[in-house]
Every structure is written in C-alpha cells, then in structure tokens.
Length: 261
Image (cartoon, rainbow, N blue to C red; front, side, top):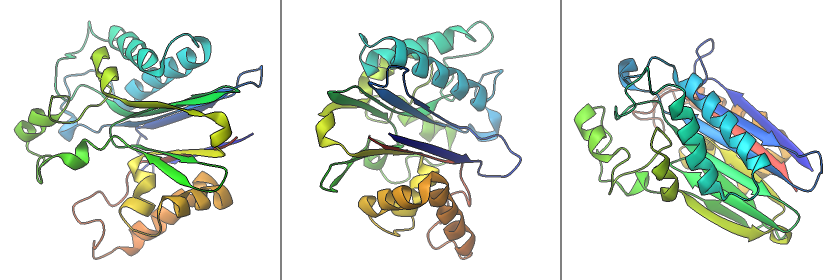
C-alpha cells in the first residue's frame, strides 16, 4: 500500500489551516485518511479565543482516533462525536453559537479487506479510481448551488447560508451537521486508488482547467501530492492578470492525500 500526503501554507510563515493524516492499523487489514480545510474568519471575527489551526488539529485528531478504534461507528457517527468532543474543549471560553465559530470542511475514507467507506462535507474533494482507470469524483456541491453572489464578504449574506437549511454546511460546533455529509460505501475490489484534496490543491483542475479529475489523479500518482501542489503554485504565480484567480486568494493553503490500495 502506498500512502502519501503533502501540505503547504498559502503564505509562507503564516499558520496553515489545513490538516490531514493517514491511518494504517498494525493489523494491516485496513486503513483510513482524514483531510480538513479550516475556514478563515474575516478579520478574525469568530467569537472564539482559539485559532483555526487549533480547531482543525483537535477535530482531526478525534476523527483519526475514532475512525481507527471504533469500527462499530459509521463515519457520520464518528464525525458527530468528534465535533462534540472538540466543542466540549472550548465551549466554556468561546461563543460557539457565532456563525463563524472555528469550522472546517471534512473528507474521510476508511477501508478494510471488503469495502471502503467515504464521507465528504463542504467543498473539499475525494477521488476514487477503479481498476480500469475510471475516476469518480465525490463532492458535496451545496456551495456550487447557491445563488451567485451569496458568499460575498458581507457578514449578513454569509450568515444567511452558512450551516443553514438551503445553504451549505461545515463541521463547526453542532454535531447534527454530520447528517448533512455525503456518504457511501464501495467494494474494495472496485477501487485501485483514492485521493483527497482541499480546494487549494484541487485548483489545478477546478480553477486552472489543466486537466480533468483523471488527469489530476495521474499527476498525484506520478509526482505525488507535493508535485501537484508545486504545479498549482506555478500556475498561481503565472496568473498575474488574475484571469483564473479573479477575486480568489493568490495562494490558498493546499493539501493533498494519495493512497494506492
């Protein structure tokens, strides 16, 4: 089994709000991955005494521990319990009802000798490659279905859609959001490789149109996650007229995980 990951902060020297880990149990009969993309609050306004990296590290750690130790729980149940545990560590100090309380997108995959489970919440991406090379992209597309301009920097507009019915959902302080996640199971024999990416890494396909998802997975196989991130950084630096970037950040935190089964 091949398992690789790489991450890079959007701005060197500034904290990286992404978080990722892979899991390979001692038995060798299974494994898993967890990838989070922390949501940067505008002007630090989130009602919390803690940073986004603090939040993603604690949520990610709980997800890894439970996905490896509690095979009796579904990934939705693991996400709900992990959100609850993380909220309990700072609810006495922070306003967890704030719309911008620290939060993150989530991608999880867990496998044993018979099947692969997956979970996707918000706009990070999971790719699943079959033995014949066909690539299936697993997405939570609620953000893409919002009306144009819905996520302007206006805090009122943001509050109308963030973790609200008819909007989009992230892992914040409410465990019930786990039921909004996109989940499923695939026979292990039907999967050759998996890849998870935050939107800072998936820009290669989604923003810069350098190839389709199968091409993206091919880059990961040949050059590894760091190779994909390096390609994204080169494209970002070359887009001096902001033809592709438009109003987006020049560089975003970028993380990719690649697993060959």
